[in-house]
Image (cartoon, rainbow, N blue to C red; front, side, top):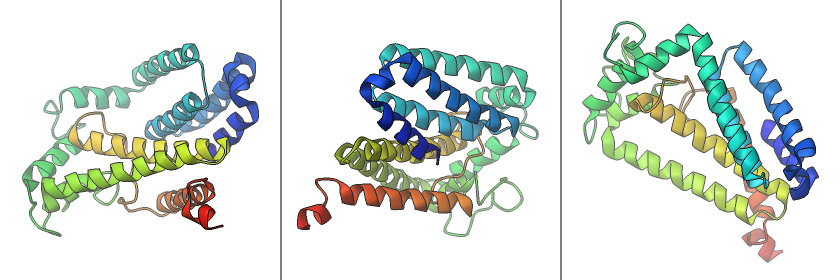
Amino acid sequence: LFIIHLAAFFERRGAAGVADPHTGLVPFLLSIGAIALLLMLQPDLGSLLVIGSIAFAVYVIAGAPWSHVLGIAMAGIASAAVLIKIAPYRAARLSTFLHPELDPQGIGYHINQAFLAIGSGGWFGAGLGHSKQKHLYLPEVAGDSIFAVMAEELGFVFMLLVLVLSMILVIRMTVIARRASDPFGCFMAAGIATWVFSQTFFNISSMVGLMPITGLPLPFISYGGTALMSLMAAMGILANISSQSDSSPLRRRA
């Protein structure tokens, strides 16, 4: 719904309206601020990172001036620093990210168990269903930690294939965005592509120690009801945008 809102918002304003601070920047920041407030009251910093990535990408594609883009980026970094400072558990996650070996039985338990799972998988894994870490060791094995379990059971080669397929999907989404027949479709497709890419990146990065654990599911792979339904609905919207583009085989036959 947020991506639909962004696409309609920027299409109505056009390039000139997006560049104007009064009609573009200020209303955009107000809408983002309202969503950020609700997410932080939960709190859910992981979802806020995904929402922020989507908003930032669509804003840039819609024609935002680079001065506004740089200002928002700096404000986002400063806000993240404040959010980490005011919440002890976020600061603990950051310290664990920097030094995962300091508290392996406490705040660093999750990431250390993920390292054990991924490392023990080797090149070709222990075999499907033969994970040891998923039995009372690794938390959230069907959700946040599914990548670590798959790496342990299926190995590095299979996980590399999963990454390649994910990137092919994202690249195809960006092609649909470029070929969209109208700005609304372009912004919608770009927002969905950013959603899938950012959530995949944040999930896998947290499992391999490139960033603190965020608690986000891995798109199309983690167990979930509403998460999977939302993603499949987004894929239906993308298919519709693709069918309406000038280069679509359906349009050419028509």
